[in-house]
Amino acid sequence: MENLSLFENLNSGNGVLDLACGNGRNGLLLLKNNIAVTFADNNKCALSNVDTSISALRSNNLELANAECWEVDLEQASVKPLENRCFDAVLVFNYLYRPLLPAIKQVISKAGLIFYETFTVHQTKFGRPINPDYLLKENELLDAFKDWEVIKYFEGIKTNPERAVASLVARKTSQNGAN
Image (cartoon, rainbow, N blue to C red; front, side, top):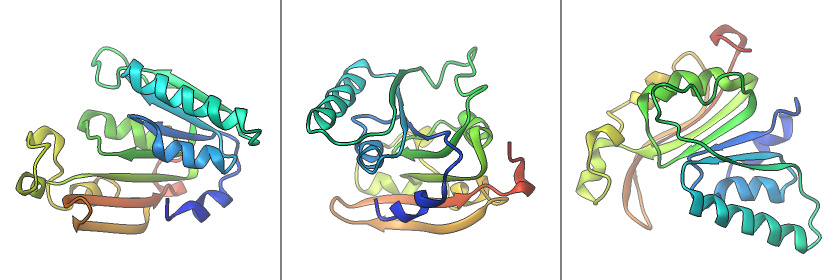
């Protein structure tokens, strides 16, 4: 993760949420750097893979921060899975569920960070996903965090593999509803 240095100033002890983590690639990198991570996904198999990776790291005598695997359905309308949780940062990669955006913003502590990258409507030129529910419109991600301090923003085509994405790193400020 190219923005690893940003985590050095996060010290409130709330850890990082790797949301819809899949096999946990991004969160595991943070864990290797002794940053506490909660890995959240609804896929038991993916979380089992994360747990296996954590066990492997521990068996190599690496000093690791706390790690939690949290099986959760983030899209269940009747449940507010992020309610009463607080994290210093949230990672979201290749996942979009628009109704969850306000909760993601709320769960991040004051001066906390969001790292968000997912596909845009231009992704249909390259393959999946093609469902517009999973594709950001132009500037949609930037607009969703317009009241945050934007540290880095990219919207366009990335290569290897070729894909259309919007990518944002932003900091929550006291003016935007910090906890």
